[in-house]
Image 1 (cartoon, rainbow, N blue to C red):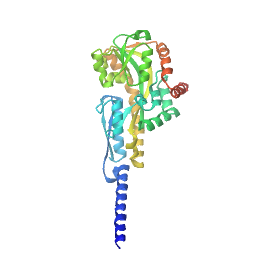
Image 2: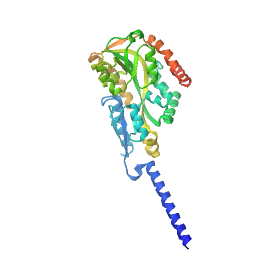
Image 3: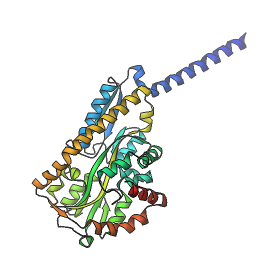
Image 4: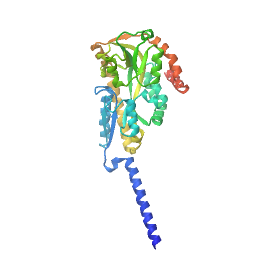
Length: 335
């Protein structure tokens, strides 16, 4: 009889333990089932007037609407949650949930380098064909596997141009030119090959670096040149147009996978609508940014793009792995 009682106690304990574990897993799978609101943090480097921020706010509205308030997203612009790399690491640590990122992810996923490979893309139409085709899917798969982030939607970007306080029209003008580049090894190599002295610097340090003459120039699309106020410390936009690219809005794999199928579908649907909204903003606002920069006194300088392409080509081939370079060549072939 005693043995039977002990067996009953043990079985009851095991049943309670399994029920608790099951309940915990269910709670992680979808905290909305218990009435809890899922709260995500999204960090990015642009200011409140930037296309990325406006689109992110639209995305948060759509997500809240489509999930009946079960998911709330707070957007933090101006690197409030840290730089791009810091924010990605915070997502991995579970203290942040979303980020807007591009080629910086190549520090984990080598194929992400191709998102901003110099002179890989002819124009924005070429970029869209690549992103939405097999090459884009290949890059997304590696980001998901190696960075631990799930791309939700993307923004095409205006071409990157070099800013300075003296006109630069050819690679020879770069001799000794101190410039900032993001934490992308390929960028360091191609600008060194072109004759400059590049150095890695966080975006939020660039304005002060230019102001204090630690660096003489930097390279970015016109929207970021304007939103960062670089027109206050730079006179020229040299139209190198060396990079056409795109950037993803991403969520941590764990955060996304913890959602129910219904909530996943709602987030994906919101992302699709947000992307369309962002594309409309892009078409109307990029031309405005160029106009605003001119109004602030910046001069746009035509450059010998072919000379820059040729100067950078050896560094591109040397610094890309065999797999990366094969992908680079595939991109060039997309019509």
